[in-house]
Image (tube, rainbow, N blue to C red):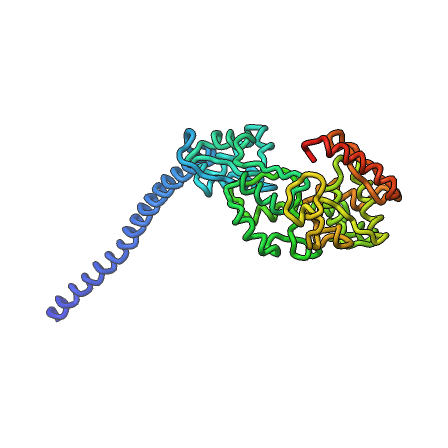
Length: 378
């Protein structure tokens, strides 16, 4: 018994110790958890504090911006309808300014920013937003070249003028004109650009091409045609739009002064209605490639060309010049009258006389002959 008692007491004692150890372990873990929680809390607060500071800095600090005037050259385009943010994005994309916000802030601070004009500007990379804005608000900084094409030029003369005033050769423009569908001609032009390259002053952007320039001119013609209701008014007259444009080109070529446009238009329609040949020297000039001047020779009038209105009745197959808006309007609204003839009796003074009969016209022509015999301009 004694032996068994000695064996039992140590076992009981060991079990008691294990129970005491198990009761003590959770307390230690709890303390550790609290400590860790405090560390996390303090660390998190520290992190959150610094994040908050950074947030406040980002919120109230000015947006990123370059300094100075920048370097290098970059071409920037301002499009129709662009807002300050749109322009800022363009500048940011091309690395002109450092941020869109810097530019919009500069624009808000300058009332002149509302007057930025559509066009191209030569700028620099890494410019301050203010420096970039200063360039854009001055129209003098726009990169462009102006080309003025007067009324009454043929397509060939227009090409020569464009070649002189742009960086493109005449051959480059002629290549485009050989594919007239690419420049947006109206269907009634029947593939001929003659008469449809509208005379006006054009701003040629730096990224222009021969095709884009010619398309711009045809587009300007379409604007004028729409303004004058060309298609509807031609139908009212009983002519096609192409015929009216041909009449307009003849008015442009034959009428020396604005006051005569509508009367010359009436003469053309009266002769067409009476099946009379037009007998215009301007069409003979076109047929033989003569540039300007007045009068024609017997040899020139004998030229076998559909543009020779001495030889062939009716209108020539296409316009012979590029008429301006006034000539088109005159073709659509001829003056009332029965005239069948007209002659500029004194081109130096701008005197044009109209006649209903051939006998009256011969008298007027005699005045022209007297002027021609004494003038070096004949």
